[in-house]
Length: 211
Image (cartoon, rainbow, N blue to C red; front, side, top):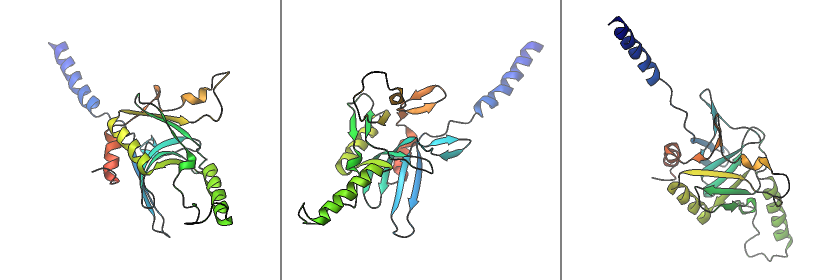
């Protein structure tokens, strides 16, 4: 009887401790920004890093983003992180087992288009094309906009997981490029796809992207 009573007390003691374990932090979180000069604003749902209750991003790392931008509307793609943000380049993106898609930095939304009605050979048009090229090469985010962004978001809402990585600039031959394996969420158990879970959908609602 004493042994049984002791086991019962032990079970009662352990149960609250087990139930008190903290739930893992949400994968997707909302990040807002506003330009105090122009008034432009963004509300982004980002799979940022978390540690000790803090949310942060790291220089050299890439993060998936779904953003509502007051200037460009809905944007879907990848952004570099950290205080010193690096150019992203083209991205290979895949939801579940669907065919992958290429998000091109050259397709980023931009204000550097040629003047309305200007002939392609004018100095103004050539200057705009040069600016566009510079923006593409230095862009710290690679984002789809318009119909492409809406299509990607619909695919995410219907899917369960996301994988992406930087697109290769050359054909993959010879010694394997193990950097291409770093395409998902880094966890204690290794790399796994980003889950398109409740935290993702909650973030979309918070940013007014979905109802």
